[in-house]
Amino acid sequence: MSSAAMELVNLKKTIGKKEIIKGLSFSIPKGEVFGFIGPNGAGKTTTIRMMVGLMSITEGDVIIQGNSIKSNFKDAVREVGAIVENPEMYPFLTGWQNLKHYARMMPGVTKERMHEIVKFIGLEKAINEKVGRYSLGMRQRLGIAQALLHNPSVLILDEPTNGLDPAGIREIRDHIRKLAKEENVAIIISSHLLSEIEQMCDRIGVIKNGEIIKIQDVGEETDKEEVIHHIEVTPMDKAMKILNETFQLESVELDGNLSFRCKKEQVPEIIKRLVENECQIYQVNVAKGTLEDQFFELIGENTIE
Amino acid sequence: MNRILKLIQNEQGKIFIRKSTWIMYIILAVLIFGNALLTNSFDGLKKDYEGDDWRQVLEEENKELQKESEEFEDFEDYNNSLIAKNNYYLENDIQPAPYTAWTFVQENISLLSIVSLLTIIIAAGIVANEFRWGTIKLLLIRPISRSGILLSKYITVLLFAFYTALFALVLMWIFGAIFFGIGDLNPSIVVQGEDGFKTVSLVANVFTSFGFKLVNLVMMATFAFMISAVFRNSSLAIGIAIFLMMGANSIVAFFADKEWAKYILFAHTDLSQYMDGNFLMLEDNTMGFSIAVLVVYYAIFMLLSWIVFTKRDVAGQ
Ligand SMILES: Nc1ncnc2c1ncn2[C@@H]1O[C@H](COP(=O)(O)OP(=O)(O)OP(=O)(O)O)[C@@H](O)[C@H]1O
Ligand SMILES: [Mg+2]
Image (cartoon, rainbow over all chains, first blue to last red; front, side):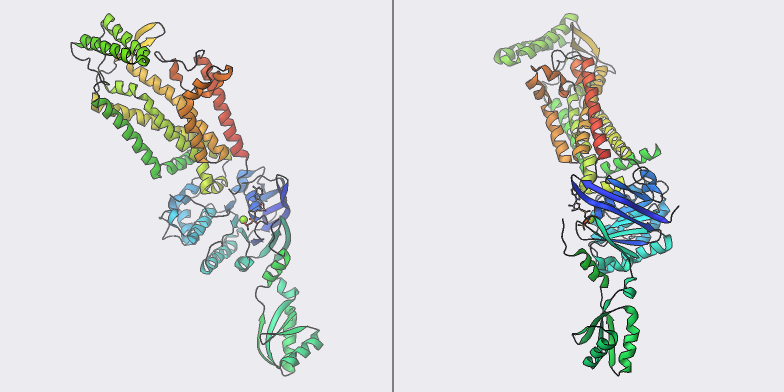
């Protein structure tokens, strides 16, 4: 058996004459957090609906822990916990009653397990309140609790950061990292905001118009690709000249800093040269949101076909 | 099997935790109580044959009916049948049974159509509401087939129909007993059979009517359930089902002279038309044909519900 927890094999979905998902193939190993990024209408939710059997698959297949969701639905879905779009729960039941409801639908979910999950997700105080009175953040948490009840090996979260404040996002990020590292769960998180999930993902897949246009490890790009750096340095014209002559780098003056594109591995050498030539360096910054820039470059304008 | 029981437990829980369900039960109880109260306060409805002068009471009643027929010609047929019945008592020297709890239940058995109404509301919502709440997504991603989910919901509807009808029946009897007394254990009544009048057991008569009402109840519930599963819209299901239930008799009457009228579901849903003393919905109806039509409609409703629910994509609303 391969170590992939979930595998998409040339997955396609056609509704009417419109091909919404155009052949996705990728696999997610155990313990990996996979970010599924794309603009509105790219097909994230559609893909997720096929992964959990809510929508029929036009062509291709989804394999979860070796079981096809098409031909072996029960065994495949047993390994999956998911939130699809919004974390909708029964508003007239309490959080606990909601969990109990889903626990009855799966084998082997004990009361102890339910308490454990409630504690893990930090809902102890509100668990006996009606879900109708929950805030969106509380419902997101209950949604995650519901998805984790049966110890799934694959966790699928469609826009889990939707409507959360920064503290909430940070908390979810910690939960997700912990689940991946300690429980070896494969986690798929979709979002249209890269910045929100970049820090919790090991790998990012970018989807646009139903196609994966790039899959990239997070953290890998900074070594090999050129990134914008800002250096606060005096005298500036001298530094500019060194960059140009010694490293063949174009630089511009920006807000009192010297800005230029270079690879990460060049940075020590550049600093050394500048210091040797008696330039005063006050600080060096790497432009934030480098992936974000690439992301927008990749998806271009936010067009929905 | 165990799993299905747990699913049914879930469904029952979702019905009875909502206040609207309890309000429906309260309304049902109030209506039954109101009927008993009205019957009790109008002497005309509750005749007194208990004394030794019951023959006089019957004869006076006949005179009044006669007078009424002369004033309002429309009543003539109906009144004549009542007079004929009274005469049967007199001729055979049978003292009419006193008005008791069982009489009240028999005369008000049509109150069970309120149970149909409640069951339609439950059946219409049981699938459609999951779509409205968005919870259908969390329901269908469990290691249970869609058929299993749908079956548990359908069984829940049937259970609801059954115990609500039973509740209504028991309540009618209790209110009847409070207002009119329990009376004989097994009183007899006179009904018009195919060849003249005859005496039958009142209790047996009540339970036969009840059984036939259950058939009607199951058909309407299954119909609403089907609309709910196919269109995923509870208001639509409630609207259509109640409209058809209310209009059933008019629909049949309107098309009665058409060749295909005998294939209309509502010409057959009320099987009590075959009981002694009742009128047929269509002249040529027979019990066997009615049952055949009901079975075919039932199979169609079930098939449609199952095919659409198990095959169709669950996408955004
Ligand atoms: N039932 C349907 N019939 C026709 N087209 C559909 C249907 N469902 C989705 N689509 C189309 O499929 C495309 C992908 O939709 P999807 O909801 O998967 O996007 P998404 O990536 O989840 O977007 P968002 O970020 O807004 O959630 C959209 O263009 C949408 O119009
Ligand atoms: Mg989406």
